[in-house]
Structures are given as structure tokens and as C-alpha cells.
Amino acid sequence: MKALISLLQFTTILPLGKPQDLENFARHSYIYPLAGYIIGGLVALPVFFIADRTIAAAAAIAGIFIISGAHHFDGLLDLGDGLMAHGDREKRIRALTDRQVGAGGIAAGIVVTILLFAGLQASSSIIIAVIIGEVCAKYSMSFLTAYGTPFRGGMHSYLHKFSKPYFPFIAALFCMPLIFLPVSPLKLAGAAIAMVVCPAILSIISKRLFGGVNGDVVGASNEITRACVILTIALI
Image (cartoon, rainbow, N blue to C red):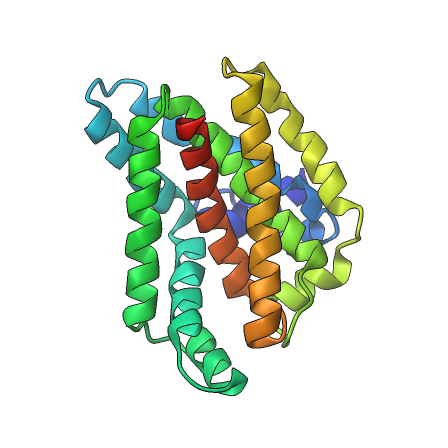
């Protein structure tokens, strides 16, 4: 329970009492998908009572941002700045890690949010899409925490220090309950592929441009993977 509370304090703004030592979660980062079930479930509750699909999709996105405190969305904005920066690796890292948001970050935030909104609206069930998207998004964070080599000290390097190469395989087991949702196996297979391919591609790009991965890249993976998984579910 300490590990789960520590995870939720790290990934949400839920009032969970006294702050837990982050090491409780760091030693068990394979439980990332559990946060996806909780966030997705909390978002799904009010969305269930909204009949209009456009409003429901918008409300789902708003709920995700509110519950998560837009913590990982901030990583997406930073990654956008790093990707769009001109110059050598040091200039890209500076753009990635500074606190100001530039045009690249704004563009990344808009593009991913629009795709997420479109995917939700096109899904046969917004509630199911939200739950699957959140769980798979959190799996991508477990993947990068284990396999994304840090290029500098920080939150990611701390979590990476405790992570083991087999952690993503355990995290995949935590995703297995998704098969009990009323959704076709083909859609779930597509979601599973997307939740692995997205962080893998981000890891390759980050290693080439920045020399490795940091917390911003991991947070961005959460946002990008969610959108890609939901789009995949909608398109299959």
C-alpha cells in the first residue's frame, strides 16, 4: 500500500494524507499501470452521465488533466521545445530542461491534445477508451523508467536506479485485466503494440538528440502513448 500511495502521490493530485517516501514506489515502478486504472476510473465516472459525445470527450480530457495535475503534460511541452530547438545537443537539452515554454512546446501540446480528442470522440465507448489509454500510457512510463538511460541527474535517474530490466514485463501483467473489458481482442492487440512502440521510438529519438532520457521524456511518453493508443482503438 505504501508503494501504491507513493505512486498516486507522484502521478496525481489526489489528497492521500502524509507524503510517502518516493523510494517506496521507486523500488516497485512496475505498478505504474495501477495508477492508470485509478485515474481512468475516476475520469469515467462523470463521463458516464454525459450523453453528448463531444462534451464527454472534452470532459474526459479535462478530468485527466485535473486529476494528474497536468504533471506529465508539462513534460510533453518541454519535449516539444527540445525537439524543435535548432543547434547542437547542448542547445536542445537547454530547450528541453528550461522552465519556459516555446512554440515547439505549444505545438506539441496542441497536436497531441487534438489527436486525443479526435480519438475519444471516434471511439465506440469513450469510457473504455479512457481506461485503456490511461493504463497503457502508464505502462509506457514503466518501460522508459527501466530502459531509458538517463543523460543527467534528476527524477528519472533516481527511479531508473531502482528499476530492473524485468519490471516492464511485470507491468505488462498488470495490464492484463484489460481483456475483461467489452472490447475486441484486435483493438487490445493494437493498444498493446502502441504502448510498447511509442516509448521505444521516444527512447531512440531522445538518445539521438539528447544523449538519453529524462523525466520530461517519460512524462511526454505518457501523453503521446495515451493519444496513440486511443487513436489505435478508434481506427481498428
